[in-house]
Image (tube, rainbow, N blue to C red; front, side, top):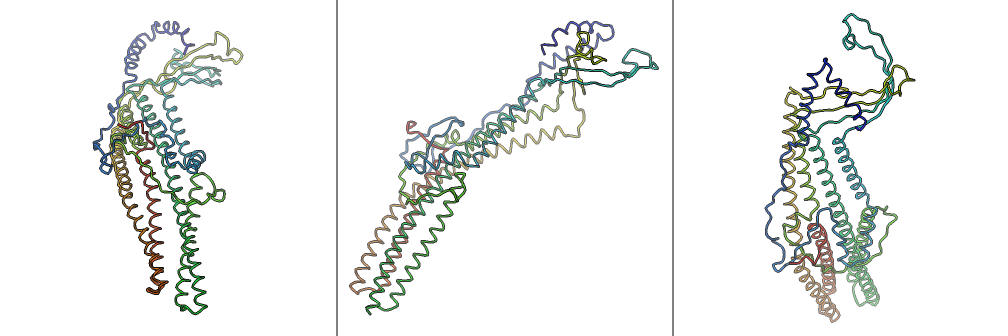
Length: 501
């Protein structure tokens, strides 16, 4: 635009010509008035949605005085899984963060949104280009000030020029589009954080499920060993004629059943290991995790206050940003009812001879619409613009409903997992008592069997009961670990003990 400054005096000289004084004199005030409207947005004033939140979670412990940390949405939640103090889990989380393909796709979607935002922002600035080339033309007699029947000749005109195009942001059409793109980018950022949290939780869930199966496998390995010893004993007693073949057959049946169930556990573990490999971005054939039975998780997670959930959950932040984008698009739709002002210009050289193109006398400039009109406004469109406004309002109403539903779902997830953890504590204690009683019953039945007061069938039933109660105990321990992970995910990530009240 600096190159236009030396030519303003010449433009003033043209304006003083008796041929076009009135038109230019009226045009300048009109352009000045329209430019004052640049940046005036027609989008409704956006206010963050107000949510009726309860004072506390219903399922939270009554004596809980914790309050969750309140980081901004784009601040990382931290390595919350390290609270489990499991180096293997730490390693798996790091590998997933580096190689998970869903995370890479999410990062690519975020990059696309940022590029689209930059593309929308570019409309706020003049578009400048350069070009060169010839044109073959024959001007009309009227354009040359000649009589209507005058003859004009065909000529070749060479041009080398810079062009400038700019749309004044009347009524905030462009700025509303930029605001919508910015809110969409922020939504994508929140969705990416939500995806990160989901992948982290999925890795932890898959890990604890795998450890549960390892505990089950160890349990059945011990059971198979004991039943093999029992079957060998019954075989010797049968060979000596002390017991009937029925008792030996029952012992063999229990041994075969335990082996079958152990193989079923091994099959489930193989599938679980393959699923974990995919989360880590690896082929199943390239991944193996040594067996290690699950240890009981005693981690206590502070749920915090319901109001802080709105600040921490990335999916809630994404839903709110979607509302903001929809609100900005209402302004874009409304601006379609008002004029659009497009300013264009060209500065450079033109000559009838290529050899004279870059001479000082060949300089030229044009200000005004090179193509189309300077000021445009549709008069009749069959209701298309009104339909656009109606669609924008309906889209905003949809996003508002989605936001409220996301908040309600978040409250439910926290309450669900608080209830799970609260009741699992009592259930685990009761199950520990059941395991202890089953083991006591099994020992007594074996003593009575050796004394001849009960049949071997009583011993088998007692052993089955021990195995069943131990299985339930392992499942409850795994469920407690998974519920802990689910609660951390439901509250939006990690927490800080420094934020206690």
